[in-house]
Image 1 (cartoon, helix red, strand yellow):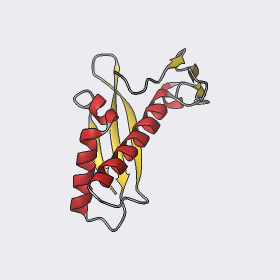
Image 2 (cartoon, helix red, strand yellow; image 1 turned 90 degrees about the vertical axis):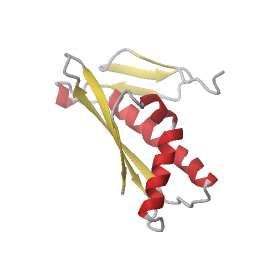
Image 3 (cartoon, one colour; image 1 turned 30 degrees about the horizontal axis):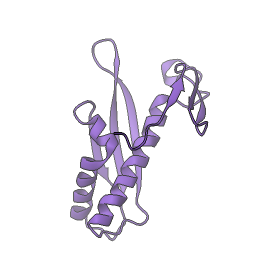
Image 4 (cartoon, one colour; image 1 turned 180 degrees about the vertical axis):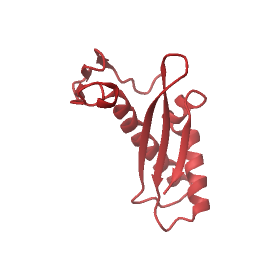
Length: 136
């Protein structure tokens, strides 16, 4: 049984996307790099924002259980759209986690890896798209 279900509708990369509760309503536009106007957001930006937010929240939960202070932490997701070699496209992701200076590199790396095992976006993408985990 789902704890929460998000519902959104879109009419394509050049158009609009909106959520059923009206909290999300964005203009979409094909990226300039792909021959569009770039006048709106795009699915890759929306995915990047969602993944970054989900990973950051998951890290806060993992850190809390391990009694690690991650105050000031942030996650930046870079979502690339790349040819898949079969006439289509696929995604690739780099997650850049800025950790507090007070954390050792070893503890930070362990925390990132543990977070990657529990984050719903990481679990959804595992084995489907490459995800690079980086600590800054």
